[in-house]
Length: 116
Length: 111
Image (cartoon, rainbow over all chains, first blue to last red; front, top):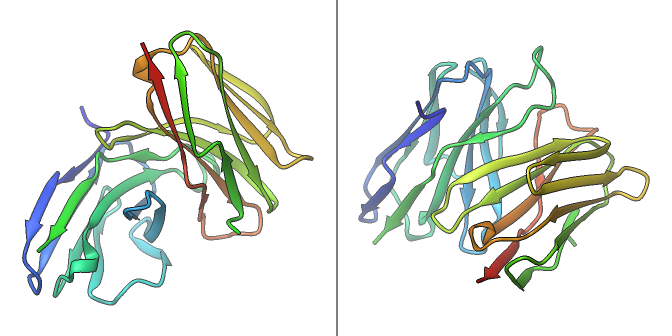
C-alpha cells in the first residue's frame, strides 16, 4: 500500500480555473505538508498541518487554501490559477511530536501542475 | 547565501566509483536529512541524523556537528543511483518543524 498518495499525478488546466490536489497518508503520522518545487528544483514549504491544525503558512498567495478534514488527509485547493503556479507540488507527512520530534519525511509522488 | 549549501551541484562518475556529496550549513540544527529524488520525480528519505554516522546498504551518511558539515557517500556506484540528492536541516531554533533545504546535487552514474 502506498504510504503517501496524492492525486492527480498530472494536472493541465487553463488560467483562471480552480483546481484541487488531494493527499492521503496511511502511516498514522500527525503532521502533513505541502511543498512546491519550482523550475530550479528548490523545495519550498507552503503549509503544514499538525493534527488538523495549521502550524506553517508560508507566504503564498491566498488563492492557495489547504484543507485538512482529518489528520490523514491534507488537500490543496487553488483558485484562479496563474501561469506562475506551474510547478510540481509534493505532499509529505511525518511525526513531529510524541513519536519522535525528528522523524523522516515521507513524500507523495508529486503532482505536476501545468497552467496554460 | 543559502543557509544550506551542497557541493558539487552536478557530478558525473563511472559505475563503480566511490561518490561523496557534501552539505554545509550555517545554523544550529536538531537534525539533518538526506533525500533522493529520482528522474521520475519521487522523493525518498534516505537518512535522518543528528550525530555520527548511519549506513544503509551502499549508502553512508556522516555528520560533524561542530563543523556544521555532513557527507553522503555511495560505494560501488551504479547507474540506478543516478538521481538528485538533497540535504535539508531542521534548525534547533524552529518550533514549527520547518526544514531548510539545499539546492540538491545531480548525480549521473555512467555504465
